[in-house]
Image (cartoon, rainbow, N blue to C red; front, side, top):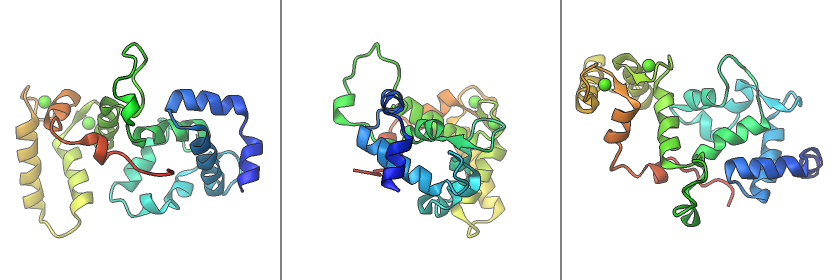
Length: 195
Ligand SMILES: [Ca+2]
Ligand SMILES: [Ca+2]
């Protein structure tokens, strides 16, 4: 698999992905062989089914939502470039990236981009707001069946009440950021894959 991967991925493509995602050369080639081993159709793209074979996603209660995030709207295949772009949100922020050149564009794994990624897992209809219903759906996936609908409903109401500062009964991205201000998102949304 390794030799197949390195022959198919062109050097200039690796360079571009490196620049775009911040992954190192060796991480990119290793993720490429992971990508090709998931690509059962061997057509250079992954389907939702291919993703469901990733054990970390299969056991994640939000696995389906995360898988969805890999797919551009209306598409059911993702190529390696798109795969890496989404994966980059989970790349840990390295110490040497913290005081980076402020004129450089916002890296995909920045705190804001990680939060935006999380926000979109909730915002299913993509209207840039998390409604009570959308919150409820995610809560239900995360807690399983041990909590009654009434209890979940009151958790959702309380969460929205606490977050909603403009009184529209839903959570905007700015309100979402404020709620998570003190949460170590960088740590929580990093997956230490491929050292
Ligand atoms: Ca929404
Ligand atoms: Ca609001």
